[in-house]
Image (cartoon, rainbow, N blue to C red; front, side, top):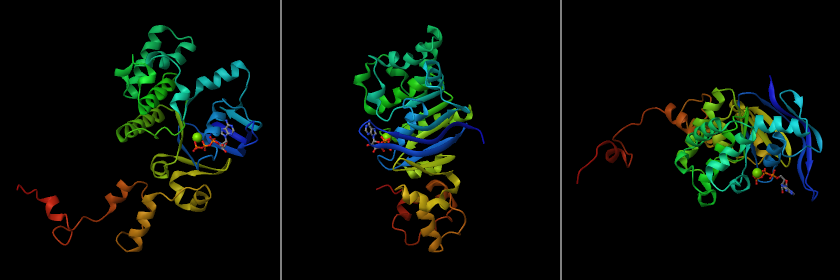
Length: 294
Ligand SMILES: Nc1ncnc2c1ncn2[C@@H]1O[C@H](COP(=O)(O)OP(=O)(O)OP(=O)(O)O)[C@@H](O)[C@H]1O
Ligand SMILES: [Mg+2]
């Protein structure tokens, strides 16, 4: 398996003595969907900041495309160009006066021509549904709109690896859906997507690989499809079991569905249920199937 990014025994202690990461080893295979799960303070943000070299490991190594990261100027430029990070808090990422300036900052810094930059900015803003806001001042945007602009800013750099720190938090349901479609499109183009989340249900249905963090340690990595075999590791990382697994187990226990392998989303589970019997007992059965005009 080729890993586009790899952490080897990485440790990081913040200046106040707090351990951000301890002996963390992790392999991220290319062109796959990776979800990193862990409780508040588990080290997810610290880990992402090591992956794009915003933080330098105090112990261990980070490899990008098979080579240890070179933390001198040129090496850092190579990593920052190839590995884009969308911050957890948009106010820490946005610093320009208006949306166009912010999204164009990265491509301009790469030395691209103005026409190409304009094209990249337009495409990135279209992708996150913010094209009509191109001239607006950043500080007037809502939280979710700021978050979309941050994502556009990183997309405009066309990174090989996209890191997103809790991208779904604060986005409405439509935008969450649009973002997963966008991420799937990037995966199809060979981009590696790594995101952190507190939503185990989303991680289970979306990810190819799940990585668990518990108090600064990379405690487990496994294919998302194998999650049902890792309930102990989930518990140790303070993660609940996905609701689809709990629902599936409860239905199978009562003999209402066959004991087949649980699907990975509630929608898929509902699709396996036998058809509803009409007209008997269910309080809504008549009103739902036969509209009545009063
Ligand atoms: N700048 C900092 N200075 C000191 N300690 C820090 C700093 N940033 C993070 N920490 C500590 O490092 C640990 C890991 O923090 P981190 O922000 O990586 O966690 P997280 O998993 O991203 O949490 P959350 O889910 O709340 O975003 C925590 O104990 C935190 O208090
Ligand atoms: Mg965080």
